Length: 300
Image (cartoon, rainbow, N blue to C red; front, top):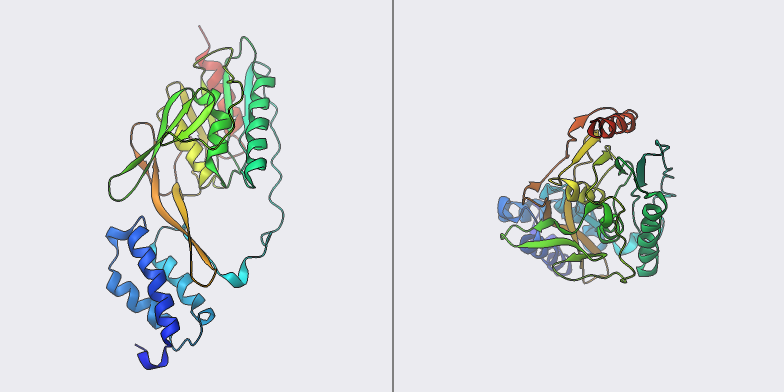
């Protein structure tokens, strides 16, 4: 272990600031030996003299949490659009007797998120008609963002009532509910209430498509459809981070997006790691499998 005399007081204080946040809030906090984690992080920091010198050790600390979702954003690396343009996701063609909605990833400010909801609801209005045999909800390629606009927009297909939970290590649960056109998280909503849209055929059959790029908030939508009657999922397993992140700002202007909870379905079943579909198939065959299943449900 490096001689503590080689580590500046500023560095020691910063590492403790970070580890204290992790110890208090990490979803895996009850599974971790914090004395050992502190020691490993200090060893990684070595003879760091400045806060910036500690950044590799902070990345390492988050890796040691084992949640695969927490993220450290140093103040020196907070430029916009560092990952390039996101993938373009196109709608699929389906038979006219089936409603189809692609739920894309959701990023942006409050105005952009409201526009996202409006666009999703408009897709549903346009494609809804009497005589539909069911709906296909396409989550393939949805790598996440903000789950609230996604669940608010797809709410008419999900149906009213409790659609899931966020579960914390201390046993607390936050409730997800869709009600009268709004998604409510523990009773609160940050969306603008417009006229509630009600499907022409209530309580439809729903096929959910997902793949290995379905992640984070995309997995939240996956979980929201789990346990819903008349619902089946198709494709491949999801990316494997069905967890809730919270932002913590640090004293130097950096921040941590820390995994603090897991998603659970309407039956209180928690999900950790990749979520497997009801029918495992290649991403390319998921659509045809879903169409065939919906047709079979409507044979008399």
